[in-house]
Structure formats: C-alpha cells, structure tokens
Length: 133
Image (cartoon, rainbow, N blue to C red; front, side, top):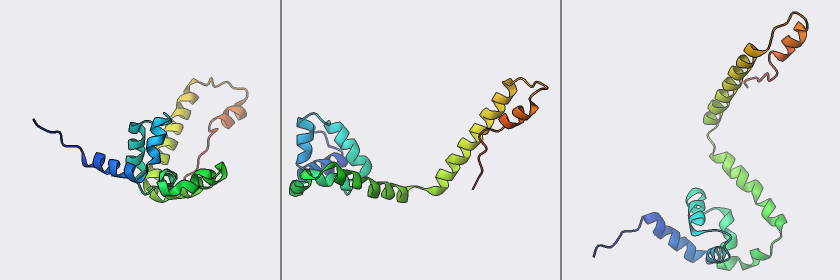
C-alpha cells in the first residue's frame, strides 16, 4: 500500500494547533472550520498577535473585554501598512484615476450640449478633479 505524503504546510499547521489548543474549541463550537483556520494561518502566519488568545497559557487573555480586542486592531493595521509596497499602491491609484477620467469622458459624450447653461456644463465637466501627488 502506498501512503500519501502530506504537504509540509499541513504538518506545520498540526504543530501549530498543538501549541494553540483553543483552536479546536472554535471548531467544536462551529465558530470556524478547520479550512478557515488553516487559510487564516497560511495567510497571516503563526507569529500574528491574533493567535495569542488561542494559546493554553493565554487563559488570562480570554477574560479581556472588547476594548482589548479593539486596541489590537491599530498595531495590526500598522503592521499591514509596513508590508505594503507603496510603488505598487501608487500604480494602482494611478490606474483607478485614469479609469475615472475615461468614465468622465464617456459620460460627457452623452450629456447634451445646450447653448444655455454653459457655465453649469463647464462645472460638470470634471466633477472629480483628482490631483496626482
């Protein structure tokens, strides 16, 4: 009989679950599935702060209020901002700006150009004037 070799990431996840036994309680109470937990673990990594509440030695953290959970959001947000590539973000914003400009031009083709109210037509010409920093 040939035995299936498991992917190394699955083995690492099993070790992670052993270190964080409260994850099995999440699955038993049907708050999350193993698949969801695995995907979350794979995306954010095992060093993320959000896993601390699932450690056995983190029993005191279970008693924290929502205030403690809300205060964790800011460091996570800052960590995410550090990981972002600003050049890529600028590229995407430029593309969005270009797309909006194209949509504005398309809309302008369908707006009837009447002789009266040319000042309002001029004002409606570019309602979203974005500037590139």
